[in-house]
Length: 44
Image 1 (cartoon, helix red, strand yellow):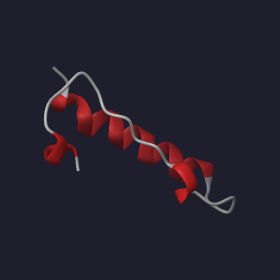
Image 2 (cartoon, rainbow, N blue to C red):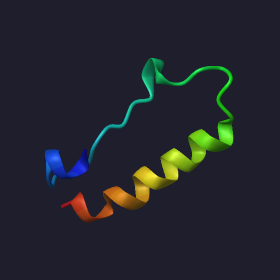
Image 3 (tube, one colour):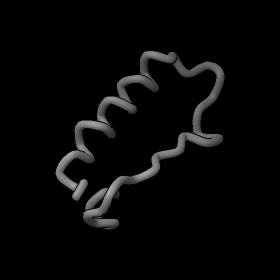
Image 4 (cartoon, rainbow, N blue to C red):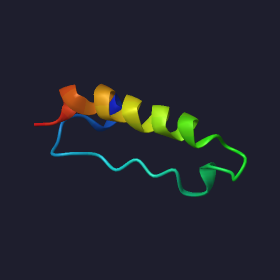
């Protein structure tokens, strides 16, 4: 997904309605950490 948008000042990742009350908050945290780490090369 990041590659398709290319380089820029930043990206917005929104969980929106894709996260349910049953989701373990720790899992959401892992997702957020992954986005931060994987998006670094795309920031200009």
